[in-house]
Amino acid sequence: MAILIGAVCLCAALGLIWVLVRWTEAGLCSLLGVEFFDLVFGKDSALIGHLHLSALDAVSMMLLAAGAIRFARSLRTIDASRLLVTGYLVLFVCSFVRGYSSNGLLAAANEARGFVGPLAAMLYFANAPASGNLMHRVARIYLIFAAGLCTVMLLAVAGLSVGLVETANPVDDRVLPSAAAATIAICGFFAVARATYVRWGLTDHILPVVFFAAAIALRHRTVWVMLLAGIVMLLFVDGKLFRRAFVTALLASAVVAGVVLLGGAALGATENRFAQGASSTETWQWRVNGWQEFLCDEDQTPVTVLAGRPMGSGWWRIDPESHLLQTAPPHSEYVTEYLRVGALGLLLVVLFASRPLWALWRTSRIDNTMIYPATSIWIAVAAMTLVYGITYSIEPEAYAFIGMASATVSGIGACEGEPSRSYAGTSTESSPGFAA
Image 1: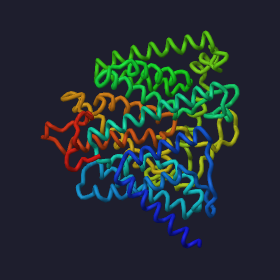
Image 2: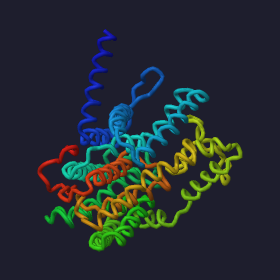
Image 3: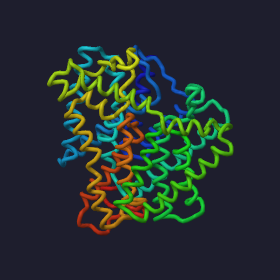
Image 4: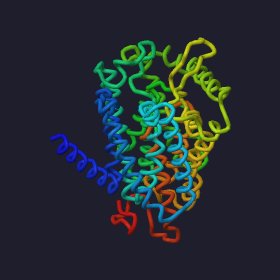
């Protein structure tokens, strides 16, 4: 019976992997779906052997398997992006093997979970068969996801046990984590571009203000900086969108200020908490102290500097102010990458993430509506995601933006000289090789 159940599960997994290879929307919906489920109902895991596996782990493994198939197919043509990905994969595998040898499978596998984001972006989303219709559907999926996050936020404020209501610090009771706030902020920019270039209904004008207001009200300073970075980026790449995003941010700020002044105590967002969130430097100093301890470790060798420490080595350090032992991760995507895949791996992942910016900028100069909803908004979103990685680890749903941006750049490069090609989502037929 056990063999039969195992065979059925294997066939089901293979079937799901085939679906993920065929339809990018299925992969994105699976990833966002389990993230949303975990946020609403809390993370739950099952013990399989000696490993605790959650639904997110299962989806991540299938995404990586589907991504490996896509990446293997893409190797029929070699370009700079694939060389970057190959180099990063080599460094990651070496770190994992060294971690398995020195720290054991459980420790190595547990830390490897934190690298699902860049791996999924490089293997799966960056090799998506980009088309205008696909980008249209991807943007719509993210907007629905952000609307769901805003709904969870309202339910948590109303007192339901969703989001971070049960686990948040009572002194700092933010109801959604920073990753959710960052996704809402990014989707706010998508909504601004959609209302500016694609649709002009009343809902399309209200949605950006709602998303911006939610991102501000959640009181994550990194997300505030993200919003500012996105607006500043639009100043240089799209004046029309800059003006629209700037006005939207002002309106959203006014809405949040009004809510705080009139009903902030009921919502758990008083003036003092906003002021404290804007002025407090404790968490920033804690991060900087940790980064200094990691980067100035006397046990570093040329090998660990270039290729990182083995997976599963842990995040042990002594905080110089409290003199207490700290085991939390570095709270920086770039420090984390450096510590596990070294300076070489960090360079490769930064090049992969920043590579689409230049190509998207050139495309926006030619036709800003080539990529749905606007080419310039993808530049802003990519820049915002990179800014977020300074003080937090970039989550898989945010890395997916980077992967899709890379996919659109590859698609545009593959069809240069074909002026009829559009990624704006207005065409009714997909061109050969770019079927959604």
